[in-house]
Length: 268
Image (tube, rainbow, N blue to C red):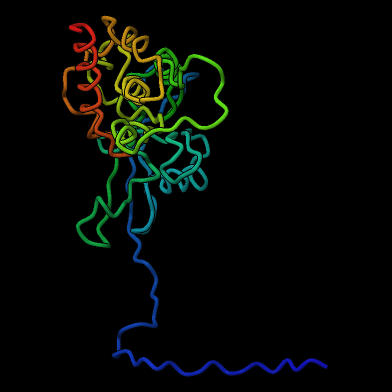
C-alpha cells in the first residue's frame, strides 16, 4: 500500500523585513469616463457622442473598457478586435485624438496617480468609410495593399531549397517586415484624409519590404506602380504615420527610401 504522507515544506531561509512580501493587496480601481463616437447607419446621418462610466483597474486597457461597456451596459456597441495582444491589428481606433491599438493602450498611461479618474474619447479611424460605431470599411485600404503586389516575385523554376540571404541584406528591409496592416499609419495621414486615391503609408511600407529584398525580382514593377500621381510622391513628410505605428516602424524613412530608389532608377 502506497504511503501518501506528504513531507512538510521547509521554512524559508530568507527573512523579509516587516511590510515587505506577503500581502498581495487588491489592485486600486478608479472611474473611467469613456466618450465614444456612435453611429448606426440605419438611424443616424452623422456620428454622435455617447458617454459611459465604468470602474476599471490600472492593469486594464482601453479594449477592456470597450468590452465592459459592451458586455455589461450596451450590447449594441460595435468594434473589431481579435487577438487582443497587438498582433492582429484589428482594433485600431482614435483614442484621445491619436491613432492607437485599443489592446495596447493602458489606462494607467492617462493617469498621474494610481487612483486618478480617467477620461478617454474613442472614435473610428479617419479616411475610411464608416460602417458602424468604431468599424470602418477596410476594402479601400486593402485594395491599395494588393496593388503593390505584396509577395515574392521571382523567375525561373521553383527552387529545390531555400533562397539564401545574408544578414546584411535582410537588415535593409527588416523594419518594414513588422507591419500588421492595422491602418493606423494610413488613417493618420492628412493626404489620405483629403484624397482617398492616395496609396497611403502602409501600402508603400509593404512595397518597400519587397523592393529592397535581395531575393525579389519585381522591384521595378512596384516602383512603376508607386510612381503614379497618387503614389509615393503625394507624401508630405508630416511624420504622422511614424508616430501612429504601434510596431515602431520608421514609416517616413521607408517612404523616403522608396522615393530615392525611384530617383536612382530614373537617373540610371
